[in-house]
Image 1: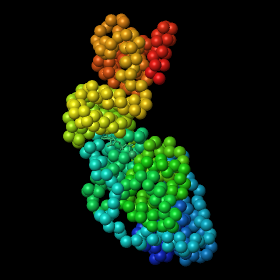
Image 2: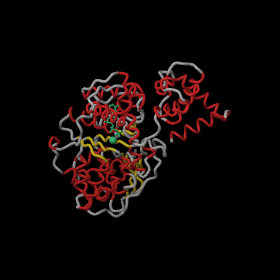
Image 3: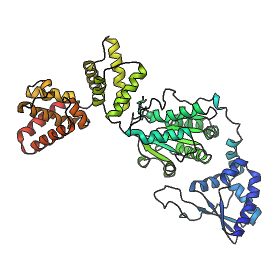
Length: 468
Ligand code: ADP
Ligand code: MG
């Protein structure tokens, strides 16, 4: 650091300090480090590209005035930017970005006034504001499993110390129905319950976009932005929805930056990993990497069982364990689907005034699958195979090792693997509780036979045609 640079910069700061609110000064000018003075060129170091953009966009006028005072009208400002941390395209730290020159023309006063307005607004009374949170989503009823451990613990850390951990922003991503909304709402509810003064806001990206469009139409974009900039914890769901919406992204970018810089927590969800978010601007994506991204995966069998049990418990319904196991083995797509089946099961049971047993579960499942015209089920595979070989379903699932039963059983297992998404363990379960090595052996055997035995190939093809 050069001595003259420090002296000149301190004189600049005197001028700037007088013309902007204390808070803005702290946020935007205290982190700046004066690097060197060459003739009339002062080089300052700023923490990030975004910092530079923000200064340029909002304080160019103040900076010009300060330079005039400290160096005279020929004074020029150069920036040295510390590269965004975690940005893969550039080395993690250093001064890779060449200094950028400030535009010579100062922007009109109006812009300066613009940026001040959010700071000048009165504090919001958070208690009167709706958070749009659904109180039923909590950590207590979010079942933990291997599939969601990282996301859940990061979420919990954020809930306890919003804006303070390095998980800012926190991005939760994963397929549909895997609990993203549940988890981020649980974070919001937790924060709200523990700090009533914090303004937590949940918004879907779709709603955010609509509000934005509306704000443009009614010429209230400033109010829109200022509102979001005052939020203490912003939860924005399904960010992939912003893809291709350039103007909305731009405004979100500024809100994001403002919140992040002032230590506010940002929580987002997306249906895919940040790197796969096409149609989102790079500068936005690079900011997502500042914090933590955690994915939610499909729950494994044990977690599915625990989720079903939790759900039943909250509904005050009792079901035999073997039915629960059956459901957990049969639905492995996502939790929403699992819940859907439980709800129809309860509805069926109360309509027909019967207990929820295995038969009812099978029926409900079959109807749901038929309704949605979905892929083949293990039941339909077994029925087709039993029909073709003229054996009973009980035989197919039974213990007998007779050749005329083993062969169709192996064919059925092979097709179950090919046509459903069930795990080997779950297939074994549906065939009389066989273990997964038996299933592997069956699949291997039939797969070999389809290669060198025309008859087996023919049988498999015919069954596939039937199942279609
Ligand atoms: P997403 O937002 O990822 O599409 P949701 O959060 O809407 O999924 O979850 C779908 C349903 O599944 C919700 O009713 C939610 O409560 C439930 N759910 C998902 N994961 C879990 C879990 N780990 N424990 C309990 N319920 C869960
Ligand atoms: Mg959701």
